[in-house]
Each structure stands twice: as structure tokens, then as C-alpha cells.
Length: 267
Image (cartoon, rainbow, N blue to C red; front, side, top):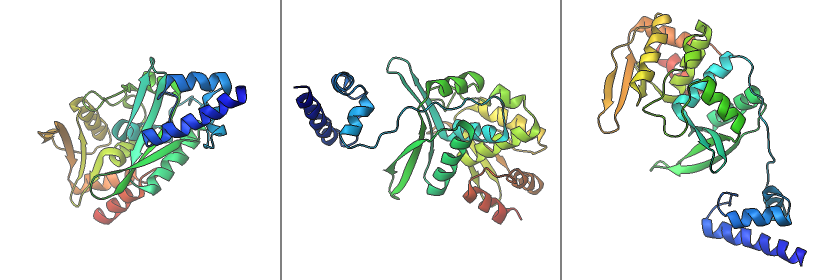
């Protein structure tokens, strides 16, 4: 009888997959989740018995100090990522997005280096150009808590309320350069005659202006970039200032397509 129930559950999970059009998670059905613990010991054990690849729980290392690599990661996360922190559903996720396979691989290696964590990722097609959008994920309550508390990172929709973390503003010049590079890679545009940084948060751009000022880089006023999306931007336009932005990319952590544009435009 016990073996019959296990086989029935495996059939149920496969039928549920067809119904959802994707791989089920334990949050999709409390009944299946409870039965998986009763008959298999855990959700992962049931999924493995059903023929799915399973990643068992990982526990990322929490960094003890702020490094250039971590500062760069924070810049990327603030601009091109988010944190989900849902105590009710016990859903804790740190995610960064990119549409470029090479950048996906770089982010996976960076996460492994920083947190000793093997990230999962998924992709979906967005827009008319059929380019995949990759979501690179870390599922960890401990790391999500660390990032929220130490880097002033809001969970959920953050575009209009995000700020430059106070720990970054108080850090040394090299760490600020790494953070700025992450911001430009995540939400910056390298154009022929200027570098543009956009955000839905004026306070965030004010913080970026303070960092640029410390680096002796001039930028214009914060302007409304798009009335429909309620975004704002700053631009770095002068030749000497653009050369200083180029020097920020003398590092091992960067998006290659951004650096190639900088090298091409600002010789």
C-alpha cells in the first residue's frame, strides 16, 4: 500500500507538471508537499524519485568584510536584481538578471567566489527579439537577511526607493569604484559621447553623484528621463571625465560588452 501511494504521487507530480506547463515547486501545492514528506521524507526526495534533477540545500558563506568583488556584486544587485523576503511562504530569493550568456556565466562564478554557492538559473523569452532573459538565483534566508540589513536593500519592488548603501558611501575609493562599475554594468548606458545612469529613485542618483564627486568626475543635474515610466538619469559627458570612467574598468569584474564600448568610444 505504501509503495502504491508513492507511485501515485510520482504520477500526480508529472500530471501537475503538464497542467502548470513547468516544473512544480513545493509552494504550488500544499497537499503534494505534505504527502511528499509523509511518503518520501522530503520534497526533493520525491522529485528525485520522479526523475527530476535535484539540488539539495546549500548554505552560502556570509562575507566577513566588504571587498571590491562584493561591492561590484551589490552594484549589480541594486540595479539589475531584487530580493524576495516572504516570511509567510518561507520564500527567500536573491536574483540578478541578464540577457547575455557570457554575463550569466560571469555572475555564476562571482557568486561561487563570494558565497561558495552554486546558483541555479532559468531563462525566458522577452520581447520581439527572442533574446532569453536569465534569472540567476540564490535561495537563502541568511544571505537575504545579511544583504537587507547591511546594504540597506529593500525587498520586493525597490525601483523608486533604493539608495546607495551607507556602508558603500563610508567605504574607501577603490570599493566605491567597484560599486560604481556594478551600477554602470547593471543600469548604465555607454553611448558614443556620454555615460548615462538611470534610476526610478532620485535619492539613489544623488548618492551616485556624491561618489562621482569624490572620484573627481563631473556629471550634469538629475533630469527626468521618462515621464511615462517616472525614471530619472544623470550623464557624464566631458572627455576627461569619460577617461576616468574608463579607468574604473581596470579590474577583473566587469561586463565585457560594456568595457568594449568604453574602450571603443573613449580612446
